[in-house]
Image (cartoon, rainbow, N blue to C red; front, side, top):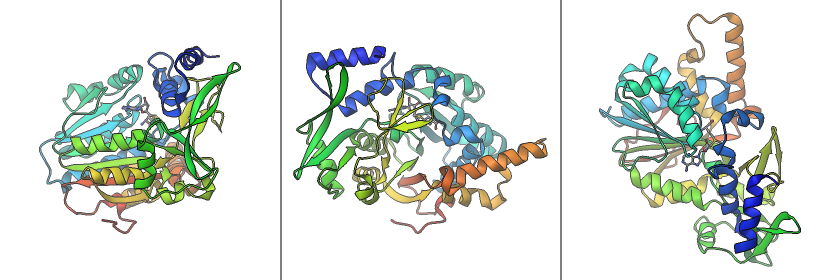
Amino acid sequence: MTPLAELLADRIRRYGPLTFADYMRECLYHPTHGYYSKAEAKRFADYYTSVDLHPIFGRLLARQFAEMWENLGRPEKFTLVEAGAGVGRLASHILDFSASKLSDFYRALDYVAVERSASRREQTAGCLKRHAEAGHAIVSAEIPLHVSAGCFFSNELVDALPVHRVVLLGGAPKEIFVGFADGRFADHIAELSTCAITEYFAAQEITLCDGQQAESGLEACDWITEVARRLERGYVLTIDYGHRAAELFDHHHMRGTLLAYQDHRATENYYASPGQQDLTAHVNFTALETWGKRSGLQTSGLTSQTAFLLALGQGNEFADLYDEGQGEAEGTKARLQLKTLIHPEGMGERFQVLIQQKGASGARLTGLSGIEPRI
Ligand SMILES: C[S@@+](CC[C@H](N)C(=O)[O-])C[C@H]1O[C@@H](n2cnc3c(N)ncnc32)[C@H](O)[C@@H]1O
């Protein structure tokens, strides 16, 4: 039993089974024992993200954000909010590149790196020191209350938001809670804890098959609603792995999409070592679009990371991949890293990019130029 397992078992003994969302929230974000509350060195043992591969990811994103700023009429201040900024690596790639290559944009840039974990906020502050001193970056635990012109974006945040688990039994949806009996955690099936789950599936016209398990990402709906409310004019860009609802809840996903990651291995053993493994669920992009639309966000497009990065990079033949004074061997290594980012069998097709907008001009964004508009 990990220290967190002891705490959770005690809580279940006293108050009864936990919703999976509560269990996942504690496993990932408990202030002392949560997986994301710990120092980052641990994370590399479990998985890496696009950000860890090469700064080209941040550099191409910077180009996309600069174009958004242009589309908004070059406002004097462009607030770029990165939610779930981790240790600030992506933020520093975007800010460094903007400072050196996109100087007009950098002058307008007000970067807000938002991170829930205190230890990660501290690491981010160290990473962004130069830009903070220049008045272009701050680190925060919360997203800003109001953004008059800008973009909210995230990379692998939404898959880390807690989900409820549901199973359809005899035609009726039931919830899978987390119980504790005979010295171990186990699924506990009971009535739904909230009617928001019924509304989640109904609003997206999702029907499950009998016996099918699925996740209900209520926190992602709250997240996009809140972002839309706080954004006056601009964009929301979400990068993550997932699908639209029709695919996410089809017969290929009879057991849902929840996974536990430890030591680069994915398992369905969600109850092993609470607080010491990552828990994630695929992102339901239809939910982000549906709840976004209710709060005034229009979908600009959903595309694969491959198409997004290719569209942004091919204009200058991926010149942003190279640093001054770089040798041939480093250039070759950079090209291989780019390949992992865009290759369909690497991260390219698994990851999707959703862009939503509010009060922005209808001008097309380069990152979406490979797809038909859906507005
Ligand atoms: C999978 S990590 C991704 C980190 C980084 N974006 C990257 O790509 O390497 C998810 C991060 O989101 C943070 N996070 C989760 N929920 C959050 C919230 N509501 N607000 C801010 N940060 C959050 C976690 O603490 C964690 O650092």
